Length: 101
Image (tube, rainbow, N blue to C red; front, side):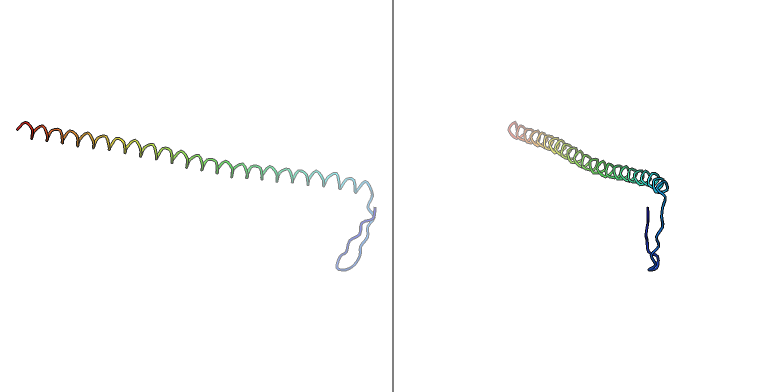
């Protein structure tokens, strides 16, 4: 097998033995495939981390919104009930006092 390449404009040709070429292919191809596989694993891990972080942020925001709304509603209802009861009691007491005097 003949291999040609150029160095500084000079053509260089070399005859390579088939066994040498076979050895080069058998050592280079697995290395390339192994490197590609490691890159795919790293990309998969990175994408998984990004997706996991995004889902966690969305769930956190949703839970925070639901809890905030629930607490606000409960507190609002409780305050409204207490204020209503106090006002009703005061008005009842004033009216009964005025009526009975």
